[in-house]
Length: 248
Length: 62
Image (cartoon, rainbow over all chains, first blue to last red; front, top):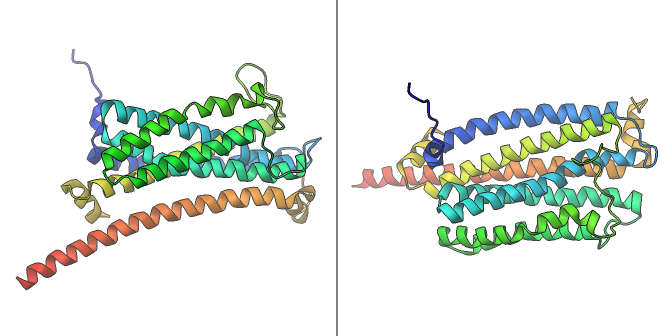
């Protein structure tokens, strides 16, 4: 009997990954639209008013998903940068580059929505609290990654230098996550964790989780779309990239 | 359902500016990101078109 073998490395070749990334992006985009519609309906129609914060709490439906994705995208970016460093694989480093702007955007949105939530509830747009400060450091890490990559002409050297920065910066992600436990922060603790039951009403929690999935799907779509552009940019002198450009 | 009318919904219990400011920025950021990716792709296509036009012009001249 012959074993059916799926060769994962087959898709490490840019010309094979390019069409796959296109269809994956389309699927992720449709999922993001459907999930966002469902999540916004749950969050803004079904979820009740919060007893303490009134309607201001509804910012949670975009704030928490953006904040989660800012960390998840960073971990994914550092993972691909690390794979690129170890195996010297072009596609992995391109994946890291494709994730960086989307991660920076999620970090910016987490900070922006956080400021708009902080003003009515804390009375301040910004405080130098451990959670907020470490999230701001995350934004600088993303910006540092992109600027360092852009400042080096030799792409392979740019991949290595920026990849190293991404890996060193990983230390900041647990600091963000645990900041509300390690320090006495103005920012509230986690509403959802693996160790205890969530401290939220069901429709609020459900709306937040569905919106988190929507943001997740959006990030996958945006990163894959950018990856396709980067693939063509970097491989434009090869026959497959020229064909892909002519087909477009 | 916690809102009885559209104006109620838009007011968000007095927090309209904060809630809609958050959602609006998310929407704007997503639109901007997709537009930037699209523009980057368009630039590549245009460059490829120019290269092709250049190539055929040179063939024509020869």
